Image (tube, rainbow, N blue to C red; front, side, top):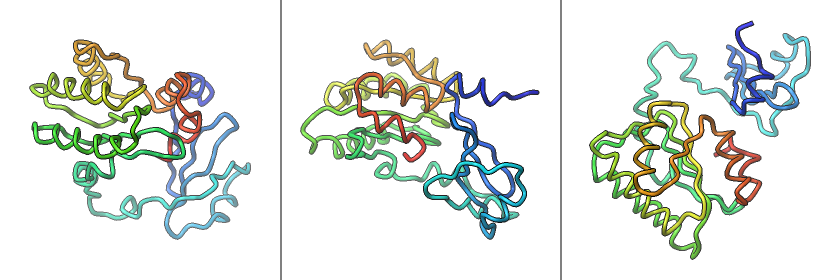
Length: 216
C-alpha cells in the first residue's frame, strides 16, 4: 500500500480521489462524492460501486476542459483571475478569504493593487477581522519579497485580528516565512488548508470558517 487515507486524514491533509467519472473527497466518515463528469448520471456512478458514498449537499460538475483534447489554459485562467474575485469577505463566517492560488507577483503595481483591494473589502467593516490566505501555486519575485512582507505587516496592523496562511510549497513556506518573521509577523505557513482553517478556528475565529474550507 502506497497511500493510507486514515493516516492522511489524521495528519490533517486533504485528499481527493479523481476518476474519469467523478471526484471524491476524504472525510472523517468516509468518501464523499463532490463532483460528477459532464454527461454522467449519479446512477452511472453508483451502479459501478460496491458501496454507497456520502454525497455533498450540492454536486458540482467537473470542468469540461478536463475531457477535451486541447490544452486547458489553466495557467492563464489562474494568473488572470482578478483580485476582486480572489479577496472576499464572508459575512456569514466573519472571515476574509484571500485566494492567491496560481498568482504570480512580479511588480510593485501588483502589491499596490493587493493592498487597495484588501482595504476596499475591509475598511467599510469598521473592525479588524480574521483572515486566511491560500498561497498554493503562488510565486513572489525574490526582489519583491521584503516589500511584500512590509505590505502584509501594514495590512495586518490595520485590518486583521488573526491570520493563518497555507501552501503545499515547502520552498515558499521557508522564504515567505523568513520575510514575515523579519517584519515581526508569524512565520507560520501551514501545509494544507485543513490545518490553516483549524488554526484559525482555534484562535477564536468563527467556527463556521473551519467547517467549510473547500467552499472558499
